[in-house]
Image 1: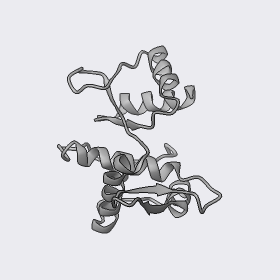
Image 2 (image 1 turned 45 degrees about the vertical axis):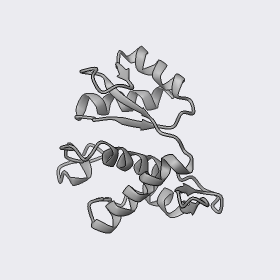
Image 3 (image 1 turned 60 degrees about the horizontal axis):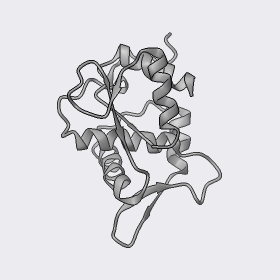
Image 4 (image 1 turned 120 degrees about the vertical axis):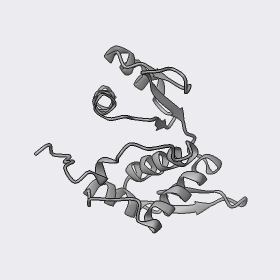
Length: 151
């Protein structure tokens, strides 16, 4: 968990991160690591300089808008995917399932492999929509000079 907190802190200090949607599981541990790193985190909108963290449930009602945002980004071509093999694998393993009320979420019950990357991307896109698409920063996937490898 400390490695994840280190990477998040690096991204927060490098980019204009508007918010971090997170699953409640292990959150207390992650926020503790943020404290150790001196990274201030808040669930509110008014704490200047703090990383805004948004509790994002994994049930149908919470994930349905995120799944819709994910699908819309794919269909409209606004989601730029550089062929990252881990994200590709996670997306290929994810299925959309629907509850009786018509809400949808990503599911991996028919797969042996992980879908965490697809869920995280859906939550990020859902948060962007929830925030009203207010002047988002340039995505690293849209920046022709961005490189994961740093080369």
